[in-house]
Amino acid sequence: MEWLIVTLASFAAGLMDAVAGGGGLILIPALFATFPDASPASLFGTNKSASVWGTSFSAWQYGRRVPLQRRMLLPAFVSAFLGALIGAWTVTRIDPGFLRRLLPFVLLGVLVYTLRRKDLGTEARNLHTERIETLLMGIIALVIGFYDGFFGPGTGSFFVFLFVRVLGHDFLQASANAKVLNMATNLSALGLFASTGHVWWQVGAAMAVANVAGALIGSRLALRYGAGFVRHAFILVVGALILKTGWNALKTLY
Image (cartoon, rainbow, N blue to C red; front, side, top):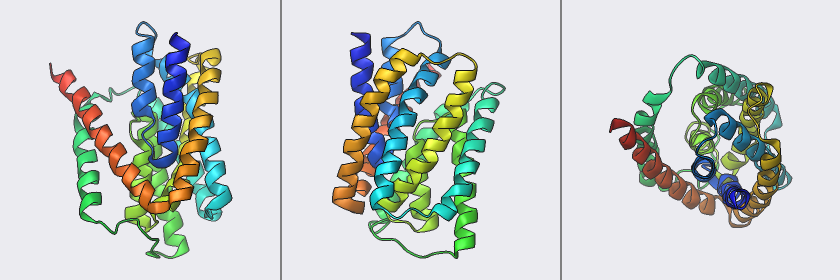
């Protein structure tokens, strides 16, 4: 029964993550609820062992239909990988509890800004030269990669928002690029957890199959219905993240 629960949750997480990010909103709570006596490190490691496959297949699906800026993405991929490693190391030294209280307000700002700018991300805009855009993408990848290694909730959504707001991408292009960089952060974190024995490989394998199935459906929906669909999904995901992280922050106060 436990395997069935987390496998279904992994499917839903893969679908959500492929469109607008935020799959961890489903899968991580499901793992903690299903295996309450397990160590958090093992649950996070097992989550990464599944989600890395979903993000990889999503990136492949997007890459077939959406032109990827490979010359920009390669250095950003390296930055995201390094950022996640540094973040994962930092979390062994610093308690990330303060982010639980801060995150709902950050997400609320993202949501309000997106709702106020109704044209945001509906079409791509050329805001920078290729060199500047490569630099900015690398900085975003490093910062959000660090965040993913250190804390994590909403990583894909933050990638999408910053690519739209800072780089001028439409939501579809931003989601495609986000999948590539989220793959880097997942690989980095998975390597760290695996090296310390914090991955349940058999459970992770079943979850990975379901996550890939969800990712394939989610990415096909996004590609079929375009940037407008991804924008609406993004708004729903960020709204759900605000509710979830806000509830978690309230629980830490009592």
